[in-house]
Amino acid sequence: GAGVSQSPRYKVAKRGQDVALRCDPISGHVSLFWYQQALGQGPEFLTYFQNEAQLDKSGLPSDRFFAERPEGSVSTLKIQRTQQEDSAVYLCASSHREATDTQYFGPGTRLTVL
Amino acid sequence: LAKTTQPISMDSYEGQEVNITCSHNNIATNDYITWYQQFPSQGPRFIIQGYKTKVTNEVASLFIPADRKSSTLSLPRVSLSDTAVYYCLVGDRGTGNQFYFGTGTSLTVIP
Image 1 (cartoon, chains in turn green, brown):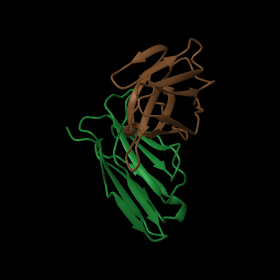
Image 2 (cartoon, helix red, strand yellow):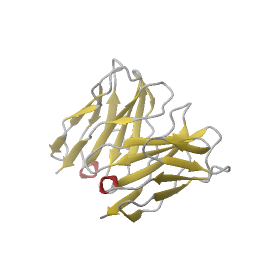
Image 3 (tube, helix red, strand yellow):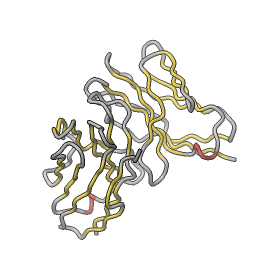
């Protein structure tokens, strides 16, 4: 079956613009994760959903970052008033069960803020 | 949340066995150890997971000593396509608390 997909793959934004990044998890996967990966660094956790419930958002760096998964499937990560330090690859992952084990990652969205 | 320490980089010749060790001194009783592989411009990919002793699958083995304060990922007979970054994660499977990737180990396989 299809893996995790993310769109757009690349996004260029001017500083101050709002952006929305989409994640389509593997069908039937209960858990969904967002990570931020800066160049040369490992992925850093942002937030975690179990179905439509956002169970952990401790990694969101500021109140400009907002994530939702209203129907327990597709998720959107929104960044308001983008700053240059937001430039990174944003990775989405999903896993099958409520108790997370294997995470399946999408290809990521590379965000560049000018 | 148990943090991990790995070597920043390693080099190996093709055909050799590669062992990457990860330290996790404050691992908790319920924590599992999971390894991921990441190629450039791709998301990480699951390799192997274990709790104690030894786990083996078609691509790797994972060795975990009795005190579980470290673990070693073993890649048999590496090829050029194994050049990637390898991450060790530690967390509680029950709560899904396996989110800390660290900086990983960049493995370069040399012809």
